[in-house]
Image (tube, rainbow over all chains, first blue to last red; front, side, top):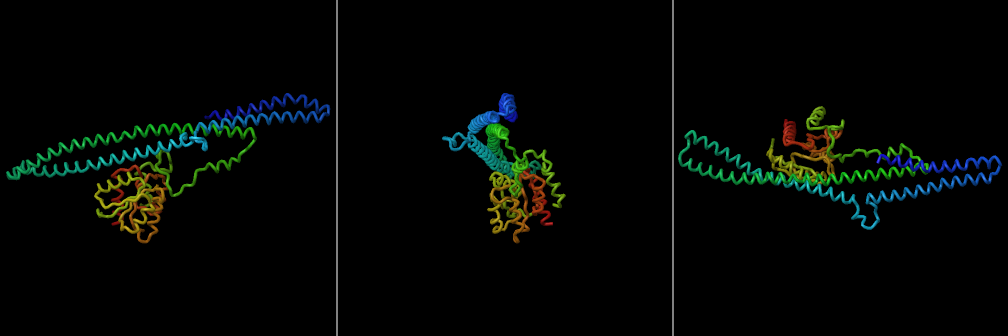
Length: 270
Length: 128
């Protein structure tokens, strides 16, 4: 929407051009009236020029109002209109982002459920394999009495059967962990839509900004740059924190990993 | 290190509490409790004989840094070891936490190893 300031200037120029034309048209006659000392006629001409200026202003303001209205309609956040709630894309964004929150939370919990269910299976295999290995070594060194060997053989068989069953279970869990990652695709699509909408909102706001500039130009309003700057300054940081650093490698006042944190802390004596 | 020590995990996201709880269990610490915010954690700490606090920074009601300050200001809690596990990664914030008296600082996303290292380091110092 970089062309908006250009648009504003063009609109301003068209008013200027009409005004200039009017002044040029009337200038010759104005001089004639002045030379002749006809003040009443000269004043009338000045009034006519002023009327042209005012007329242009009214027209511009009317045009701007219409454009502003359509920009607001585009944003679909106008309150008071019927179905405003249903139409609101911002409202829709909230729902979409909630969906992302829920999906990611569910995926995290599903994955942790499966990891927790898998841990005892692995633990059993590890524990029983250790115990069997020790006894098996005793057997190969011929240090095991026959009745103990019969017991060992039963344990080996039980271990093998259970390993078969548990490894099936484990691979089912691994598959489920894999499919739980499908949230990435779904939430990715939703976030992409939201990003598009934000870009669209930004464009609409830039258009409105362009219109505001045109109003300023036409009406001859000037803003104090200091006040504008002050109002657009970011809020002071409080204890609330800022959340994850999205571009940790770019900020100078941001640590990019745990090693940096440890270095900083040890420089502080921690 | 006493594996039976009572640990309070404070984070507003239940999944993160669960991850930390699981990692602590893997390290042998099973005596854990959870709170979702500084304002619910503080009364638990004041009445619960906790040995160790693991807290997030950014939480809705009372933040982790405010919880840390409240702990350090409380006569009975001021020596409680506190580990901050947080996504806050600005240098100023880490310095702020250090000045408030944090014992360790882990930035998210973190590894199980990082968590273990920090906990061991904290208790080496506390016991040493």
